[in-house]
Image (cartoon, rainbow, N blue to C red; front, side, top):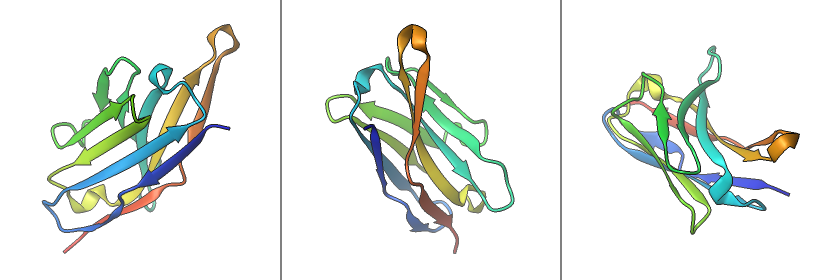
Length: 120
């Protein structure tokens, strides 16, 4: 019953900005860790940014200083603000949610993916 709805992808010029949004439902959102992954043609899927339920963030070295992940627990939404975009940022971006289940382990969910293209 957990669902993730992504939005915000598109075409931008190098140096431009874009904001991705991921709205979650069917979960106690404040307990969940959120992350953004991306997969470019011919490359392995990689984690771009991660945020815990308490707001602690981590970033891939390739995006550190340019991307910012945040969350609004009142709106059950995670955001990825992308600045100073480069052509190598072009990829399909996926929202990821990890729901803790105590001693029974965690459950993982994925959004449908949204295309980000950085080109002149």
